[in-house]
Image 1 (cartoon, rainbow, N blue to C red):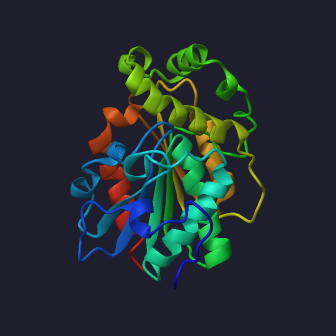
Image 2 (image 1 turned 180 degrees about the horizontal axis):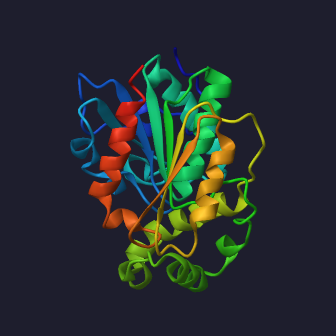
Length: 262
């Protein structure tokens, strides 16, 4: 299957997908989508920790990594449609799964739906982390319109994830502020659209101390699939990934391999 051009951001597959650790014998591709402000670096080393049957890919978003010269996306559904068009040509008939963290959970979810509805490609599994289910009315807002200082202060208060260098170093600020603002715009303007449930199982991960995403909002992902949803909490706050990578990947890897068993 060949993916068509879909506009100014529909570059070749290497612009959209980083494949850091190719595994010739892999039976499934895991496509990872980073959190707001994040890049492919968020998933560095995952390929080595996942089972041999799983090859890890990372979705490269506009405005970061090899795409620094592009404007960051501000429309989440449009981004998912563009990503799906490229991924469809790479995936072919091979089994695939998605892992999305925070904002990346919504991007992964929408991309999975586009791949199914437009390309006839069904994901084997969707894993989401640190983000309540999209049908819950909890993300509309105007944080993305705040002045720079207030914008960064609110994000830091909410997620504890703004390094001092971004607030204090003018050069770093110039690089990362547009990305953070664009990603926050995507989150706050994204509108869930009802559709038939996914046919793949969902794994929903959260942090025990994440005040932004509790157990019930995570469990609500189960309403979006006909194949069941498992909710797992790991120690930590919104970015529990930083301290729980091995535990997360052990659990995720075992579930990915399970999808390959007839």
